[in-house]
Image (tube, rainbow, N blue to C red; front, side, top):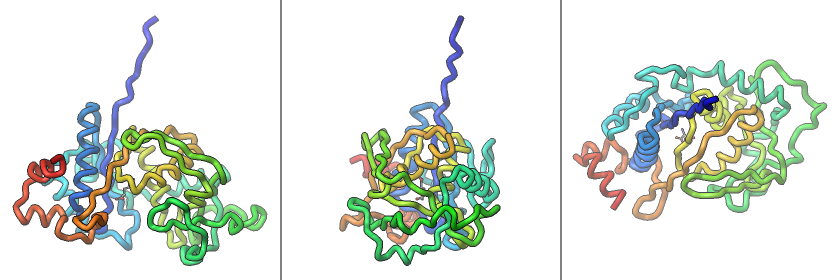
Length: 285
Ligand code: GLU
């Protein structure tokens, strides 16, 4: 009998958020994603992460498509080229996210949280977390008998209950073995906001799964998010992708580039007559 070996085709993704112009740091991460896809003979997917409509602007979507193309990025599926996993724009995927919320709720992983981000200002902080991540205190979880599961997430903040004390481990293809302790390095996290917007952790895990992404390439600021997303994968019985977290680009003073670092925006570099080849040569130097 011959074994029927089905090789999984590599699927990578670029997942920009249109809250500003893309800068050189984004370009470097996206270029890595593209190179890894090419090396694996896979497919590259472009997904526009505009779920937070209040912060995103259509003009930044147009700009990011233009800037990425100028830089030399080419994708096989995306909002402008279509594909079998369409739509590739998060603001058009609301129904699907509600279904994922429903599944998480049905599995007993979520609870409605009366506490806002502001309440967390005085909560204990994670020991190693960057940017002072506050840990949601376990005693703020509502008693199970105090609420009944509604049909929709509307009007409430919904949090994912993390397994306190459990070490969430994974191997990152660049950074090596990683471990984050639930309840200590990160706490119960929001998956759906009171204002009706599903949160990053839910939408990104849901989309990477639905779009059959086999490796997620992104910035290393998201390592701890990977631990949260792994909990979502596990809760839903999904197979997790591989992970490759890239170093963040810093400016001359050592600060991490932000969308407001205008001088290093791809459009500014292009206007100043830099070429993509030259920019890439500089970062490999
Ligand atoms: N849209 C997210 C960002 O720009 C991407 C996060 C991810 O790659 O998972 O930060």
